[in-house]
Length: 162
Image (cartoon, rainbow, N blue to C red; front, side, top):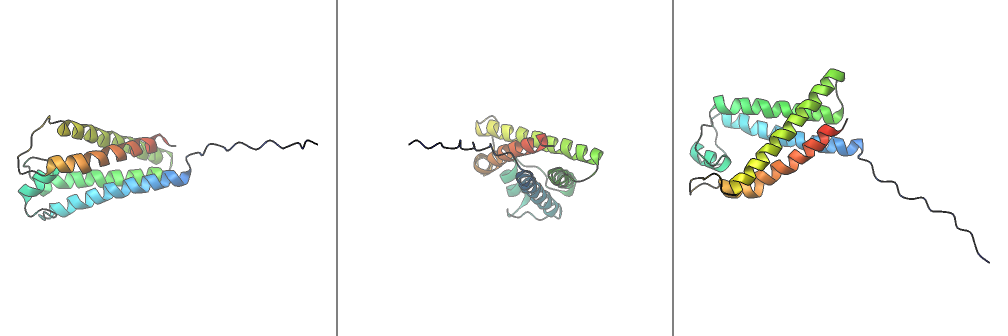
């Protein structure tokens, strides 16, 4: 005697949930906020994690530039604003114009991180030279470029989410 079996329901593809969107936004906002806070710290004249401004500049940029307030305060403002906008977009905060602005800033963050990541690939390929005592080539290859590409991709996905 044959028994009739009921068809088994097919598993539904997992949709990107609001929870995943918020987690991505929070992680990206935390990265940007940490970067902004480090720039604020450098604006005080401190050079951690380097012993002096020259060493810090060689590690972060691969060349000697000022880390004075006139240079790092605008960068701090930019990254902290980006952090706030990314978080607002991820959380769906604000009225319609505010949400649109947060989404556009999130897209700009994605573009900026992606461009920096692609530039890092150029540096890794040797298109720009760093002084021999600079740790930048190694830091760029193992930290800066992968982080920028990964977070740029995450920010682009987040910016697409409504």
